[in-house]
Length: 258
Image (cartoon, rainbow, N blue to C red):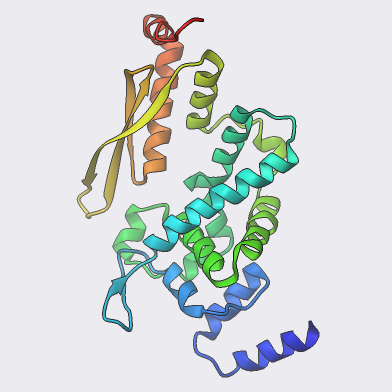
């Protein structure tokens, strides 16, 4: 192990992108095998790079992959450490960990913002660039190092270092998870439907999501990511359920009784 580290350090003296190599090692504990994946993970769509084959690229594909890997690893981990908890609890707790606000906070703590390539205009309008880069980084680690190592990174360097699960399970700030728990309690069908996409004055995408409860339109919300729009819509629906008893009864009447 010591010899391997020495060889890696010697190689590091003669490679490009030394700063990124050192940064990745510092937050993951290993040196990248394919540095190009990590370089791409730090490229926001507002400032794409031209690849060797002539195509322009950014980190959105890696972000998509990393999002799926995060969901899988966190679900597997929670399933193993909470053997007596039901699906609603596991879904709610996973949502609190992988939500964009949490990932953005982690990205800032890891100083990923210092390595992300993005236009200054976009950084002033999109507060989730760091969180998106965290997902892209997870995607890069998965492709570069495989599932076992990315799982270790997510559990040891993200979940255990940045979340207190005891307090997290009692935190009710995740409106979507609260709404899902409510629907599971009363056996109400719930659907999130993307109803519109638009751009703000700076060209940043805005998503609009509607919530259907038992086939009834319950509310909608917008955000700079689909997850953010889900949260906004869920908050609106929860407020409506709390303050409109006629609406609540209408929703409950959709539940089929056996």
